[in-house]
Length: 271
Image (cartoon, rainbow, N blue to C red):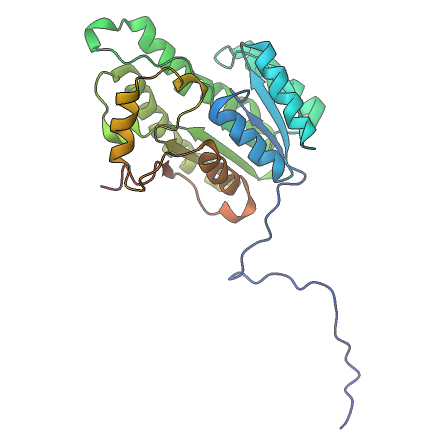
């Protein structure tokens, strides 16, 4: 048989368009607001495990934040701990500058910080409380996005992920301030997704159901039991369920996913 003289390369072939992209966040820098505890902590650890450099942010509770970061480092993850009120414009600018200086330009932004969310009939709310909800769920994502956009646009790569809530879809009663702000956040996400798409920057919102974390320890058992009984998957969600979705959206495999509201609630909002 005649030899052709051709050699076969043994290097890894370039993936075809129909093949999944290898998953890694190595070389990416992530800022997650409100990430010293609860769902934010789970997100930070999930992204750290995927290889990202993670900026863990907190505003209050220094001891808790330092303990979280110590645990984060013990697991061999790379990142830093940064204190800032992410509803304050000057502090947001300082935060993003410090993260960039220590960890590199911010590739992935997760807007997760949240205040207390008491359920009350509308007569018991005042406008100051409504304004606080809007500050956390509209003003803060706006300030953070504006701060990180120049570098994302320059690199033509970025991930902006807002943490919403199923309450908007479910129209939960006695929760009007929180529901209204989460609805505004969802609308803002959709608008930014189309605005930033030409720069290959994706903007999505992840909306968890009621996933018990530290702040739910004293919630009434009857209330918890009633909610769990409605979950189609017949189990509680855990923080890692949210961390997994965030990790997917942060990677190259989600490069064509934008403007979406992804519910993480075991099927509570299927209909």
